[in-house]
Amino acid sequence: MPPPLTSNINILLLNPNSSRAMTKTMESAANLIATLLPVISPTHPPTYTAPEPSPASIDNDEHIQASVEAVANDSEFKAEGYDAVLVACFSLHPLVKQLAHSLKPTPVIGIFEASILTSLSLVPLVEQEQQQWGIVTTGAFWEAHLSNGVAAFLGQPLSQSISDHRFAGVYSTGLNAGDFHTISQEQINVRLREATKRLLSSGNVTCVVMGCGGMGGLQDMIRDIIVQEYGRDKAKDVSIVDGVQAGVLQLQQTVLSRRVFGVK
Image 1 (cartoon, rainbow, N blue to C red):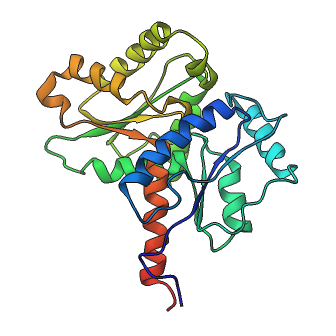
Image 2: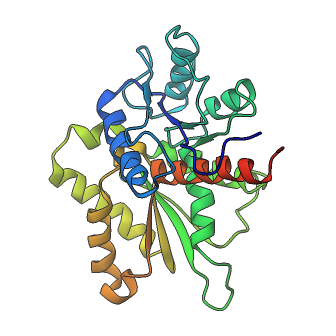
């Protein structure tokens, strides 16, 4: 018999890079959701930060692979015993599929995939006044990587343009994930403003996804940019998605669905 619906859901927050500062940022985002949803426990979810030689900032394919190897070779890493696992790297990260296979039937999702699912639920498919969602991310590498990832998630060949017109694209700040913890706030503001403005000017954007786990806490800044570009009334209709929070919500839904619809 599955656990009762009221029993707590224990989600492991897995950061595949080696930055504990970034883990802390993502933990804070997860904590906020945990305080709003009493079924998630504990209020401070367990976290894991990959050891070196995983890079402190994952900025390209080589870094992604290095992070996979660092986690795989870490004898201290234990993912068993949790109700779900959240891979907190905004990329097509191989650990999502690898852990989903090795931990089956434990639900595993990445913050990238969770953000897509959340955005599709927030942006209705209405032809008369098509609303859109898009991603603001860090370096230029991610523009093609994440665009291809969205196409793959939607089941479309990479050789074709994405036919779901709700997707407005990926816009980079030119920074890397670690920069959000090391450079001046003024520099962050300028780069983030430029990328967000390009996204907002691309169409009728009503959902902005923060395309990096290290961007947690920047919602207010992005909201201010949206208000300046769209005006206060229209800005009220724009959602800002934090990938970690989206992942926690998606995993909660999955665990509860299995308890309701699974084998009794």
